[in-house]
Length: 128
Ligand SMILES: [Zn+2]
Image 1 (cartoon, helix red, strand yellow):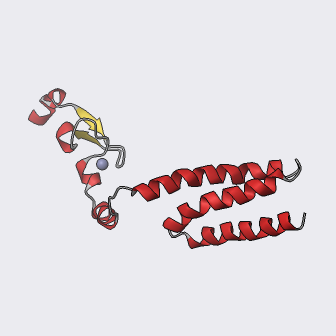
Image 2 (cartoon, helix red, strand yellow; image 1 turned 135 degrees about the horizontal axis):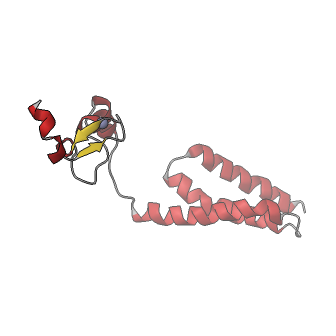
Image 3 (spheres, helix red, strand yellow; image 1 turned 180 degrees about the horizontal axis):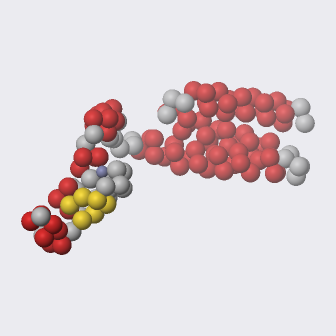
């Protein structure tokens, strides 16, 4: 009964995970939307332990940017193929620009796809 008298003094917030209404003290700070209990569940701790926080190296960063340019070339290539086969050349440029990114990220399946693009459209240009 006494507890009911003072509820207006304590601001309450709703957790965005469990959906329960809890006191402000149950949140880490005022901008948090998830309560401490939901934040520190065992599987959340496990997930945080398994992820390594790290920054990208300069080589990774530059290869990412070049990779985006390469994928833009590859994306535009199908629409350029009908204009005097410009698309074949942009395919080659896109494959060359995309390989460093996927090579550094060790995504070997996409490295193989890009090499296949190089060989396939290289032969296409040679046979034109
Ligand atoms: Zn919660």
